[in-house]
Image: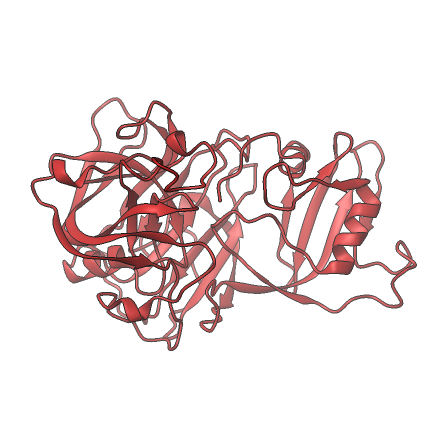
Length: 387
């Protein structure tokens, strides 16, 4: 699972890039190999990557099984399900008080935090300071930024307020096998303990200045500051059954099929994975043999000409799919969609079941297709979304 594995990534690069490819799984959701601000020329493939699976599991001090990366914190261990973020750098956990006394507006807070971290129960926890933690960072250059100084973090609309400390972070590798999970320990690692906020606090920070990647590389555990993610679709809103995986210091070739597509990162953006979209195509049921481009001025006469390509940002934060205004209007017209804010995210809802597909075509021809069942559930919001 190093960079010289069976499915080759693009040639070595001294600038940050990310790569995507079709899934080996029949259901496409998201996968990307991310090389973060480091040359890949001298990676030592004798060092095996660290693999952390993403699945629904029991978490500390919660009655609900929750989907996320299998990661623990503290001594003795308190296990959590963390959602990967490519914009946040610190790994954060919710304090037991996060859902109390109006501290959070997170929907179904007590079963949506990914677990609770009681720092007073850990013999290794050391408080550094209390502060308002803005979960974003500045992509001011291609160079790695030491994330100990909070001035490296940029404010954004949704914040967590809490405290910064050090403790042992535990990366578990399990594979759903009968035997117990193995663990990779990151001792004395910086962690955030969130006490107030509006979002899910259990977040695996994988931004440009990720403390997890920093610690793994500093301890010479991994070959380089490289990260690969397959988010899976085993969580409620996606409605699927395939679990995901994190790979630190390499990539999981079993998640990819050739060809692999390479894109430069736009490091000026909070979400640096940017691509250009040239078409979005909706097909009808298999027996109808129909397809409609949302860019087609013949299908949508209110457009004078075919729209230009537009830039899109890939994010793991699960915001609703946001499209340019005219493309959104064409989508509403074609699928008879209606405005619906049941979930608090201004998403659209279809009035009837959608049995076709939706395909997003990038400028270089790479196409991501949402299959009928996935499209239906995602567009109609049958389950609760994560923030």
